[in-house]
Image 1: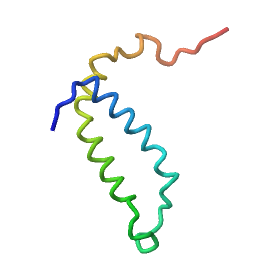
Image 2: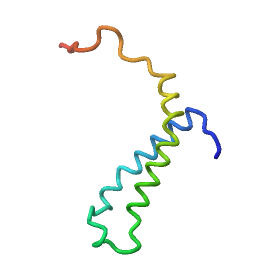
Image 3: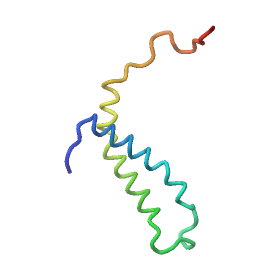
Image 4: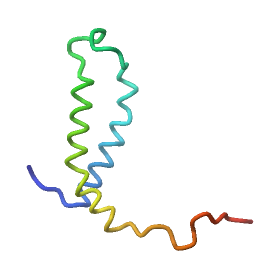
Length: 81
């Protein structure tokens, strides 16, 4: 397995989640006995979960390295005007 640098892992995970968000539109959510024998929905879910898990440590390392948080005192303030 080739290691990804944190920035690459973040981009890969972002793309993975973005692409996978469409999956529910294709998955009818039916019980297994009503699906065709070649239905790949369960395999797709497992593959997504496995890849997400592989990418997460380095993706989070990258995010933590660049995230500065909200400025102090900004929480709860409302803009006026």
